Image (cartoon, rainbow, N blue to C red):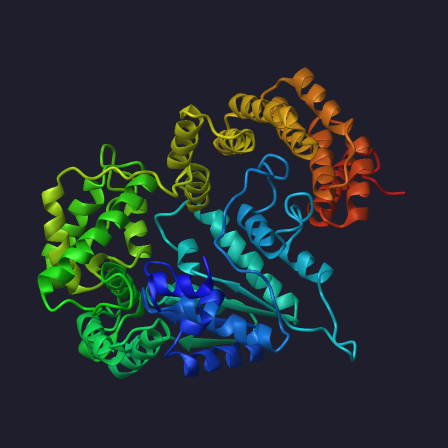
Length: 564
């Protein structure tokens, strides 16, 4: 499909996703905000971009600030969603924070998982620094989007997430060339401030407000014109009129009717554009009932997606959304973190929040609809009953399982993996091995070492069958650690010997082998392997830490305390 055809398919509207670099031409109405963010990001080691749910923070970064920086030759590290990756099993280097490993995988996708795991954020930046013509360090721009996902109280485990943020902020302190941008919803801003204020680091805050009605109308008019609309100005005025009052705010004193929330504007615009079949028909129907009908169809799709992701009936999110709509300005409280027998989990609510259907008030005690115009379509959806199983189009169980694991929803992650492994037709060999390794990670994390060893061994056999030797080595090391921790010393040493017998160019894997050798009581052999790991550099942080622990242990065990 040509670029022109793609533009015609959805016009200037991106729907439920955010704008990206490829949508830069259609990212309109945010020039001054882009310039302000680029200026702050360039001048300060740490910049916090904050705003309410659905105000367009991710779009401002991806379609505004990042392209502006790359245009002038700045180094911007890749951005994306943090995802734990079973391609590097958690049991190889369990001392490394999994969120740190996920971030480094984003920053260097070509290196992961054969190089990079086992390295701290600070060490990564040190080994990837560059200089300008005068020999001075070139600034490196990095972004952690949606930091609220790491601050949510219902997500677990909290210490791991806090340790990751601590490591990231430590890197900001120690690396003067790093320019870090954090985006966060206003609801979680105070919590993030408490973490930042503990640091001696130059930082700034940039607030992002909703669009004004005039700015939104001008942006939509220009976008529709680019998409080929013959009635751009008239359609833009009608669309902004419908989307007005769409920016729920954590500040009750804000005049809501004077602003337009970008998320709902895009959601509604995309639905109407597709219903009108492009630029040849009026964008906005004359009848409000027709608008509700279009939104009802789009909400059906979104609720089916949420139901698929959380393995519940679509009726679960629908009933809760209808309760939110009925509560009006009072809102509805969040579900308990653990409530046996209740399919409405915090994860389901967060999925609806992340799709900008609901938003939390400032203290997070209650949820409101993101736009009152959703109430009518939600009421119409009730006629569909228990809810519309999706056709599975585009749904990837491995992606869903990894996302649930990253959020701390371990039971949901395991359920996705097991369902996918039992599905017919069976997953492809590589996907099957990754799903099995993910079950191994989950078993290892809950302390079920015999089960973890079995999963890793099964995944290793699957990888061996397709000739992926490097992945087999990683899985054997993970298996060996769990065999030893389960008291199966002979089986553990056998798996370790099999891993050692392969050719290794992965310093992170060498670091893992060294740790398992130490666990097996072979401290001197472990030191030899760890020294080799540090030569390569990729696993240097974990290798150096483990070497220090072994030497300290050996020194304490020496008759003279290791002196002389």
